[in-house]
Length: 373
Ligand SMILES: Cc1cc2nc3c(=O)[nH]c(=O)nc-3n(C[C@H](O)[C@H](O)[C@H](O)COP(=O)(O)OP(=O)(O)OC[C@H]3O[C@@H](n4cnc5c(N)ncnc54)[C@H](O)[C@@H]3O)c2cc1C
Image (cartoon, rainbow, N blue to C red; front, side):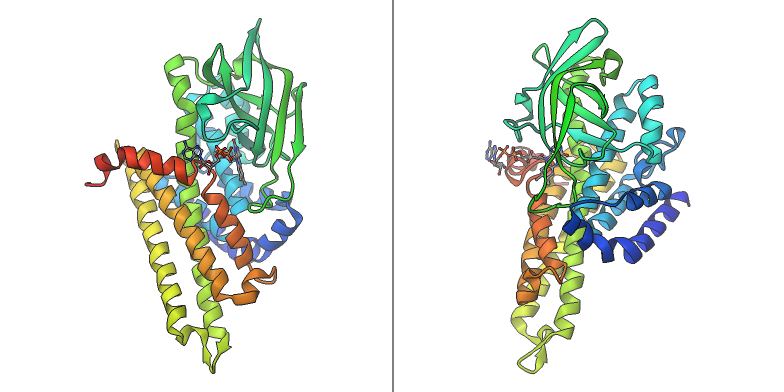
């Protein structure tokens, strides 16, 4: 009942505020604090957190739906939800009681905002090659290195940071005001322009040892992969939302724009594009639903199904946004219509949380075990 209320409130808020204002956020390259506060009030930031920590404990379908609603409105808003929930996912799964008290409960309430810092200037897809170094020094971990393209680095209060400790993968939580952490905003991104990206530079940044996530070396190696899998799932549904927005904008436009004495809708080549968009969007939905049910049932195939859903949804979002811009003609390339933003944002889906090529390699190598059931 509570979950239904969250989805209904978010859907209404999205129609009234987020969808009409998303273009302004993009132009100003920022998500207003009032929007963050309103999403917090609805419980969005605790979507995947247990009720014990003040969260909503949504199931995978419901988390998907939240992502879809945000992705329909704005890729940047979706990315806020994604990186924040990657952090809450990590803390809930591997955090100590002390870490949960300190960060998970306020993150679930939206009193703190979390971000996910893995990419580096020299390391993107190859997450095993991270150069950020963690060194044990008495009761502290000393962090040296830098993180690039970190969504909401400009405003986040806490960062999930991945690096290497004695050459092995390790993750820890770094608070924004830690001495030795410098945050530099990154502006003018092509897509997700309101994603408030930043670069983090760690210069002998001392973090208490109690900030380390997970202690068992076997588990440590899995943390980044599992957190990325969680983010991939929300991005898959968000890309579906963007495809849907492209379809809706295009159907509306083709009914109101006349050429050669008829609405665009009546022209067969336009119908061909609309058909491709509708079928692509529907196929993204089915793939996302397949991944959601696999996750809700803790199916052994849930990771590959999530990767396939993200791949399908991201590729379809790009094709659908491209067709939407084509259907809108010059208007589709002007900032008076949202489709030019959709096209820019759609490009990002093929890069983040496993690029198209990374997912192709993953799906090709594991696909035969999964495709038959
Ligand atoms: C808007 C935006 C927001 C982001 N937010 C975050 C964030 O919050 N946190 C974070 O940690 N990172 C974030 N990133 C970074 C993102 O995760 C990386 O861009 C992504 O992992 C790809 O890394 P890269 O850009 O360094 O590309 P590279 O890894 O250098 O790859 C370049 C190209 O080569 C391809 N490629 C790489 N290896 C192979 C191979 N073996 N075979 C075939 N092709 C290959 C890739 O697919 C890609 O097309 C964000 C990026 C963007 C654009």
